[in-house]
Image (cartoon, rainbow over all chains, first blue to last red; front, side, top):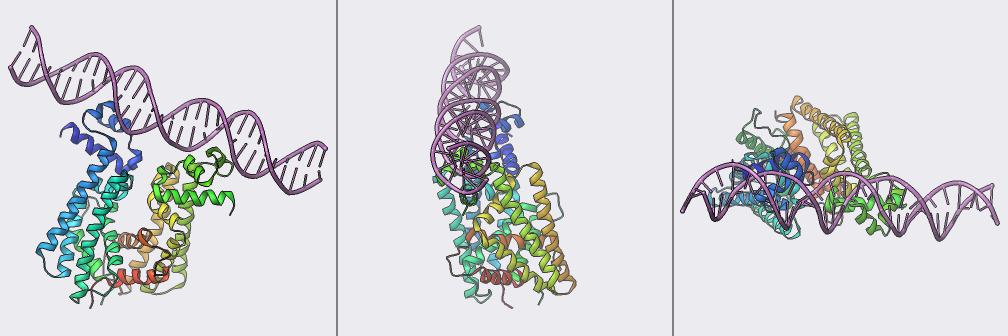
Length: 188
Length: 188
DNA sequence: TTTGCAAACTAACAATCGTTAGTTAGTACA
DNA sequence: TGTACTAACTAACGATTGTTAGTTTGCAAA
């Protein structure tokens, strides 16, 4: 692992724990074992650390939904596939995912604007899957925006509790979440 | 509205927009039309502003779940009642709710510990409702911890999109959310 | 052996933060 | 009128922040 990678990795760890504002360059440096200004031999700014995480994950989510819309055909299947990919991405780096969820709001004005736009686009494509499901007669006639946001919140909660050391694989979590959002708690 | 109330109200507005760290006493003062140090004639500290919001809401949630467990009898009914009360509390002050969701992590060590404990207690009581629902044969045999966290995430997402000026009342939102978590997206 | 570069260092700057001290103006009440 | 209190003010403190400038060290290539 290069120094730059080490810095990014440690920065994510601290950000997950203390939030973006709780990450100080002096603390980050101390954890690595160097002095704060030395960090700037490897990265451009503190903001950059946040931007890279946010936009990297955003683009991965975007790829996922594009993939889903390319291949799978009916809406319940599409949704299941999306849930799987979404959870897979989240669990791939839980520190990054946590920062992505909580700290994107500390992006600077322009970057924040772009980020929100990407996120909205992701949401729109999920809405389309749900709309399709209604059209196909598989889903209840819910408000698609409402359903999408609620769905995503359910999925994203994974970053709050998932432990790689636990019993469930990301795939298994996805199956459970898929059941939750598709069939709900009630038996029938 | 007294000055103190005005300060708290404006502080919530700023915190919702910029987070706890984005709230500075100078900005807060400016928005009110006084100087920063004057604020301290009315409040003890910046931290206090956060603590009051967090613990006020926490205790309201706790009351709600106690009320539910006192009165209503079967699990699906209990759950519906809880969803209604939860959404009602969230929508009562959306600024406060947003801060409650995002900024509790900036509570100081001891306060944070107590807060997490209260939140865990709330979650535990909801788990109990779900466990009851499984026992009664109404709910699928899900992992109760998983279900509770997922459920709560769904409910809490309301603070991200609900607008009092919109078409839906909190009650109507609760009905939709209840349907979502109990019966899911799929038709049967 | 010399040169060049990567990556660390020390020192410090300018800005901003929450907060305190000390003071002043206005107002209600004795 | 005199007194006490509320709520504002100005000035400033001490700490912390991200970051820059300038320097030093070690190593690899010429």
